[in-house]
Structure formats: C-alpha cells, structure tokens
Image 1: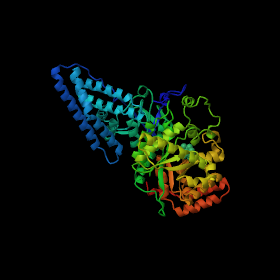
Image 2: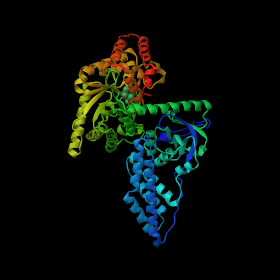
Image 3: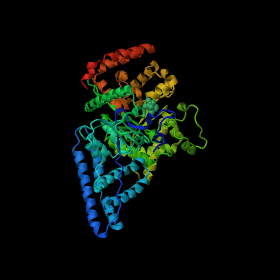
Image 4: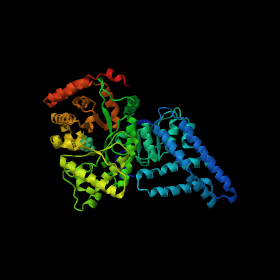
Length: 612
Ligand code: PEP
Ligand code: MG
C-alpha cells in the first residue's frame, strides 16, 4: 500500500465526520452503511484418525462441487446489463476451484498431517501466499486474494456457515446501501447485487488497492468506491446514513440534509449518464453531414484499459507511462513495463495504442531517493516546468530510456502500437530518439528477444517552438498530438499548476488558438495525422473549432467520451469549418469568447434529447 493510503485519517483537530480514502471509481453515493465481514470465519482445526481420511477427502470434494455450482448459478443469474468483467471474475474463481494442484496438495496435507479439510485448506493457502509474496509485480501479487476468497468459500461450506452475502439477503434489506468491509470477495459483491431489492450504491474498503479485483469490478459496475479507509468498520454502525464523495477521496460520516439532497441528485445524474453511455457506445462518432471523428482515450495505468473498452473509444490515444514510475521506491523493470504495455495492448484487441515515453520531470518527478541514486549531484530544480522534463529527462538518463524503449518494442510485437515523444522541439530530438530505438533493437536482436521492427513515431506538440519548427518536424515524424495543457502553459507563461495565475490560463486566448490552427492545418496539408490529447479535447464547446480546422482525432479521459460523441452527432462539419474560420478572424479575447458562447447556443436541449 502506498503512503497515500496510510494517511487515511481525519484531518487534525477536525470533528470526526470525514474519513479519507482513495477513489477507485469516481462519483457520489449516499446510502445506509452495511458492515460486511466476509473474512471473519473461525476455521475449525482438529486431528482425525487415519481411518477418517477418506471421509474427509470426500467432504472436501463435495464442498468444492457445491461452491462450483454456487458460482455457476451466480453467473447464470446475471442480466444483460452485467459487464463482461463480472463473468470473467466468476470464471477466474471457478478455475482456481478446479485447480488440480490445489486440490491434490490439500488432500496430501489431510493425509500427511491427519487433520480436517478446513485446516488443510488454510495451510495450503499459506503456501500460496508465500509463493505470491516472492513475485515482483504488485498486480500479480494482489491475485493471491482470489485464492483466499475461493478457499474461504469452500471453508464456509465445510463448516456449514452461510456466506455473509446470503445472510444479508435473509435479513431482507430493502434500501440503497454502502458496503463497508475490510476487503471484499468480488463474487460477494456480485451475489449481493443480484438480490432483488438490494442496491449497492457504494463500496468502502479498509484495505485494497486500485488493482484489487474488487476495485476493477467496482469500476466496471460503475459503483463509487473508496479503498484504504482506515478503521471504517470501527467508526461506523450498521444502518447509519453515510456519503461517499469519491471525487474528493472522502467518506462523510454525518452528511447534512443539504449534502444528502445534493448527493441524491448527483446519483441520479450518474445513473442517467451510464444509461446514455451504454446507448452511445454502440454508435460511431459521425457528424450530421457524415464525417467520422475518431475518439481515443487517455490512460495512466494499465488497469484503465478495461474502462476504455467500455466507453466505446476507438483506442488509446495517450498512455501516460510516467505514472508507472511514480509513488514507488524503485524504477519499473523492463519486465514490469513489458507486462503493463502488453496488458493494455491485449485489451485493446488490435485497436491503436499510442504509448508516450515517460514524461518525467516537471510536476511528475521521481522521488528524491531515486534521483540521488541516479545522480549524486542531484538538486531540486528551481523551475521544474522548464527543466529536465520529458525527452530531456530521457536523454539525461539514457539507461532508463532504453529500458522503456526495449519494453515498448517487445510489447508492440503483439498489437497496433505507436510511440509518442513528449516535449519535442526539433528534428535533432527525433534523430536522437531514433538512435536510442536502434540501440534497443540491436540489444534485443543480440539477445534473441522478439520485438517489432517497425514502429510509428509521433511527437507531442506542446511547446510553441515545435509549431514554429513544424516544417522541419513533419518529414521526420509519422504523426502529431497536440498537448494543449502544456501548450497553453508555455505559450502564455502561466504555470498550469499554480492556482493564483489560473485566470491567465485561457485556452481560448487568440495566441493559443492561432498556434493550434497552424499546427492542425500544416499537418493535415502534409497528410500527417494530428490529434488533440490535452484537456481541451474534452471541452464540448471547443469541439467545432478542432474539427472545423480538420482535426479528425481526439483523445481524452474515457469518462468524457460519451459527451463529446454526443456533441459530434449533433454537429455539422461544414458549419464547424465556418465557425473555426470566423473565430480565427476575431482579434480580442472578449470577441472570441463571445463567438464560442454564441455557437454553443445553437445546441439546444431538443438536439440532445434523441440520445438520452
Ligand atoms: C498536454 O500537455 O496537453 C498533455 C496531454 O500532456 P500532459 O498533460 O501529460 O503534460
Ligand atoms: Mg504535456
């Protein structure tokens, strides 16, 4: 667990009405607290006579069969709305259950130690735990919990104890409620959800991480969830009304009536959004006059790829790989990166995946301990946004860069992958990168490791000088992606992270719009693909400007895709072209803002109703 997770406490001096956690699925949930203790089972431990071993083994097999039937029955009960991930979880648990090594080892333990089946299962689980602890990959290590959940289920059947999920059902709870637990078996969540009259609107876990299966499941079920909420079970009581504000990583213990009303309204909004998302997912993003716009998703972690598919995105337009390097004490190995990239590539099933090389530095700095190990003279930069960031960082630490390139080239063998370079300013930058790519390929060849031979290389256009240099960059790069977040920061000399100058951070400043227009027009004229992947891409009111200039590819956080898709479906490209040209003729900031507002008014409520 990260340090961040361990700080799940109440702000000092504040009344005990808020607990901090880490959001794994955003949104608001208001409901009754239901404390759930799936892990609390006192496992009976006793010795048996040698003559009783056959009977014990039969008990074990019968319990395994019962659990298998329970899980199969659960999967059969899923309605069409259940995401495919849910069935996949059940399948994983059934596979573990049928694992011959697991069964045979447990039988061996019963025979050898002459103990009851429940106890033998606990001993076998400990062995699995030790094996997983040695694995150098958080995601895979986390999977030991699936073994634990499956074994606990078998133990419950053996001891005649019902699952907590079925007990809740027996009590006939009929309300919206928030599950509070130490940790949760995903199958329990699914079992509860399938109960009539039981509505899980939120999940609060004391343990857990973003990569736990219950977190992944919560995302696919779209349930606002907080993990790492320390002492939640101790501080809460059953039936107590509580409020999850997952957007702000907070659990409210005593929400005021106004907060509750607000939460209910937001929950209704979320439900509407989900309904809309499901409808829009099936449609292509085509303008009223028949032009298709490709919508891609920005991701930071491999787990996000599951959400990307659910949003109906056409691929990953920006994988911000630097997040693989942050919040940890060491650098990610080549193997770890290879696994992360492969996971994303596989889940995109042939759709494009654009992997940006690590944009470290600036506000995404490696921890000091690592920096000191890399460079004994390391000192904090006084102006990090203009310091060793993006490609400059990579060039300064070529070993880190080549390790990443090797991992990308290997993973790219199994999909539709391109490399994107952060903070490009000149053709020399690109030449240098190509040199490192050749080095990585030569090393892999020498080691006999499979890798892709050809990979498309694109450049982030996020520094004004790159736009000035476009004529020289166009021939040496395969595609371009406008990083408007930084383009605004560097064009207007406004720190994107400094709230005191945020009013100067104006994405509709004429200089920004003119630079963007120049970039999109130059690239499209030269036949090179250009996308927008900064936050501007997800702003509905800016859409006509981008597509009016000829941009056909946008990349954004997956949650924003339905709204943008909806707007594309309502937009006439010919009108958007006229609009973009007219905006570029405006000279003052005020006039430009007014033009956008005016155009926005043309999208009336009637226009949106058809997709709801
Ligand atoms: C950008 O600058 O617009 C961008 C997409 O990159 P990041 O936000 O990661 O700097
Ligand atoms: Mg950027």
